[in-house]
Each structure stands twice: as structure tokens, then as C-alpha cells.
Image (cartoon, rainbow, N blue to C red; front, side, top):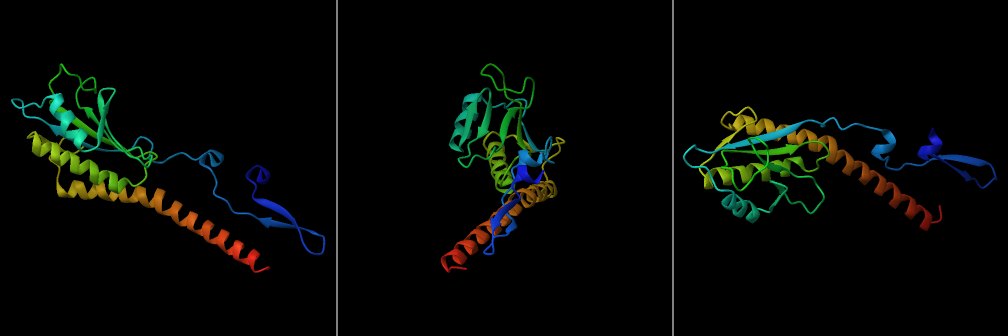
Length: 194
């Protein structure tokens, strides 16, 4: 099994005997066959319109395009140049996609936690856009249980986001930093002739 992962490398020592060296590299998730513990976990916000004041899709498109959201396939998606998945804004009613001929009474902002990086930053953007839509179109901002969004719920969402970031982001950064440090040390040692 160690051969397929290239954990060990044999090197000739100065006396001609083979020496086994443990080589460290970043394993790929496919090699380890790990599952993402955030599969099926979401942070969700809802925006409910007043019955007598349901916004028009064109106005929503204008507001969201200014905030770097892209409309495609009947929903809005956050645009992220760093290949993070971001969040989506869906029609909160059936069939889940916005259409020109349907009034918008409920919008749902969804952040799927699986495979996300910078979840705290993405959640902050999601919350900011939710608040802007709420103010612009006199919609009520709600939590995942359709209750008014409280500061306590926001704090809970931020804690969830921070936990995902700590498990995903900082470990990967510190592990990469260790590998970079090891490469630099090896390069310096080879330059110094050791």
C-alpha cells in the first residue's frame, strides 16, 4: 500500500547501502477516499415579500447584478473568481426557479457547506445581500425555520461558518506552510552542501 502513495523513497547512502527516506507530500482526497462531513449541510436565509408588494424579477435582476450575482438557469449564483462555490438565490416556492411570469413572494439564499472555502466571508456576503434585498424591496429576512432573523441566529451561522473554515482552510494552509518550509530547508541544505 505504501508504494502507491510514494511514502518511502530509497536513496543510496555514501557507503553504498540503501537508505529508506520518508517523503512527505500532500495526499489527494481521492487517494484517501474521504467524505466531506459537510455534505448535505446548508446555511439558509429566506426573504418573504408582502402580499401586496411582490418584487418584479427584472428589478431583482438589476439589484443582484450590481452585487456580482449572475442569473442563469432560473436562479442567481454568486460569482467567485477564486473557484469557491459561493451561494445561490432560488425561488423559495415551487419549482425553485424564477420565471418572468411568476410573482416573487419568497426567495431563498442557500450556502451549501460541502467543499466550501472561506465560508465566513461567503456568509457575510450572503447576509449583506439578503439585507440589501430586504431593505430595497421591503421583504422580511428570515432564518432557515422561517423565523425573523435574530442576532443570535446570525451568531450561530457565523460559528458554523468559522468551524468549517477552521477544519478546511487553516489546516490546509498550515500543512502547506509546513511543506513549503521543508522544501526551503532542503534547498538550503543542498546549496550549503550538506
